[in-house]
Length: 382
Ligand code: PLP
Image (cartoon, rainbow, N blue to C red):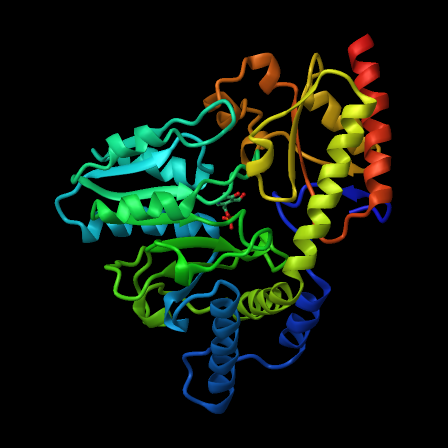
């Protein structure tokens, strides 16, 4: 990344926290061992993994450390839970989810449909909120799992997990939450939430890529996706990504300390950004219910502007944002989230996501607003 760049793409990935790279540093220089080896070096590696598990359990407020299963990230967690719930619920061949989940949940759900599983996609309102009566209708006994995200990666809109979880569990159905975009932006207390599974990804909160957590509440029936080793108490086979796990632990430790101030700071920056954009540019609308969003996300529609062109101009200016989710924007498909909210194609194609994080400043906000004013004017005149 250029030194002078303004990075407003934290929902795609959050740059590594300096405490995380410092914690990982020794791993690259000291001889490392397999945590399953019984010699002293192996025992040391296993101890490092235990320590990180403790940090993760504390950050996510899990009841027990054993509820933390290290995975390669959010995609693996989501895939694992879908398969696990169907396996452990024998006869049940139905899954309930929402139309606005991340592709790492929707694509495996579609693959299951090809295998004969019925999938119900709950609709959302124009504000991106869940249509709750539709949830009630979907909670029939034949469902093995309900999977709902805690916060949307494109709009930042939060779903009322506690309320949904209560209803799902009362109906005797397993409940999974994709909490990838919530962790590190709002407090997550798994102990007090009616949730059986939750997926997390370290690179969304200042840890390294390729490591995550799948939370499995104690006593929940579970079957692994990967077999072949007894790591993670037999719940996820494969030699542990020790460097990644160290980094994840360090990110959890740091966030426990700074999250309250960070949330405040992100919200002030995001809100002042939106206010300044509205004052400087006409014809801008927020996508997603304003007051129900995580504090760092701003998805804006710039009437009459092609978002791809706007993103290229911003990129040339050293300002990094994105349209929809990174995985989808690579394929240049219109956002399925904004589509599910019922927006017209022109509105979808004029929308840009700005996502803030720890390193952003108010000077950067001013620079971005000034650039947006210039480029939006230019594109509207063209
Ligand atoms: N779930 C959500 C809501 C996401 O935003 C993402 C990544 O963008 C994922 C899951 C996938 O996480 P990972 O990149 O760790 O596979």
